[in-house]
Length: 469
Image (cartoon, rainbow, N blue to C red; front, side):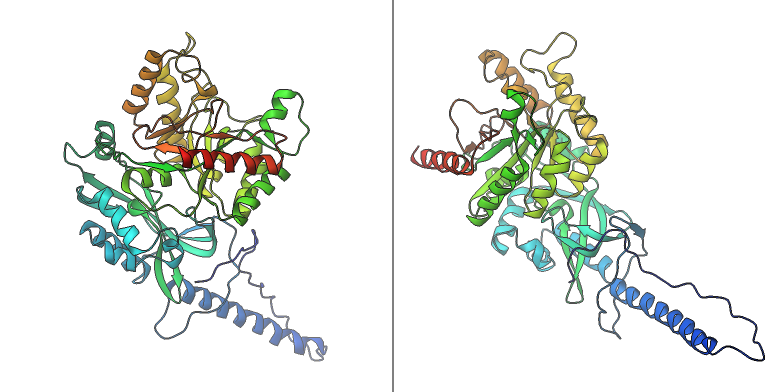
């Protein structure tokens, strides 16, 4: 395997040959040098092309060659399936169809294994999730070579990878899953899941495992286990060094410098960022989460999420969960292209309604179901992936609305196929997440102007109180 950041825009170069000049009776001495030079460049270009072919397709006769200057990032080329990576992909998926979890584990790349706590963790989760599911069939889209490819699971960059998408057809017994989850499964929940391979010591191995991946869509059990996990979920809005205009902006804006210091401190003290999917893998399937897990969430989808927050997250190899208001795109908010880039770079995208209204008491010109369903549909259409998570605008209906209004919203989230939802923090913070209350995930607010000492003090106090509870 070869990894490393490849400068964007660099391509395999081939020096064009110059036409030969008609020989003159008295040729200048420089021509004696020019012809061999042009011939040498031509032969070197052929050698480079052969070397690239050997890297991508392998050869039993020649060892893997060295570094290649890759084409621009995200440059896709459709390729004919080779007897190497195509066989590995089918070997992995056939093992999944047979529920041979051990074989699947043996085909994973070491970089994919690091996000599992060993083989038994992998086997336990796959069995808990899919053990009673009946697999019917799977299909594969044409594989592509992607240069300077970022693994969305790990945020690591690979010089090149082979990617495809796998669609898995499956059905579940009537009493296994919640009714919305069972419906989603029969309507293509695992269509076009990402599958990716990279070379490791000359062998193609699985980096992103399609429907078996740790970030694949969740299946909600009909009877979720009574399991609680302590996972601090931080809530951010703006991340920017730009001057703020008023007190509200100041309170909502964590400077880029402060955000960098916070992530650095978390990293230095052994904390690991996880996605919302990871959290529910732990709550529903018993996945062992990394030591000191935290979630980093970002409300509203402001433009500085792309310009400021994303680069800091990637520099720390951290994941973030971004809640998008689908009716507020462009201007001071991110564009769809920027949101797609976040998703491609391994950030999780979730719904924050269309208009950022109280869904417990929506205005007359909209409705709770419109805000939930249409925002979900818009995100799924734009991004080509299931949207399973939600965030309540201004925390309602859980701050001021009635219990009846709260129950109606919870029922709507369930029926609309959402798996989980995050709250706006109350007067006290908690990091306890309850698998039987998936639509009331607790968060910790991170305010503008908050010193690093205050940030770490709030985290430590919250964890101490939750441990004692």
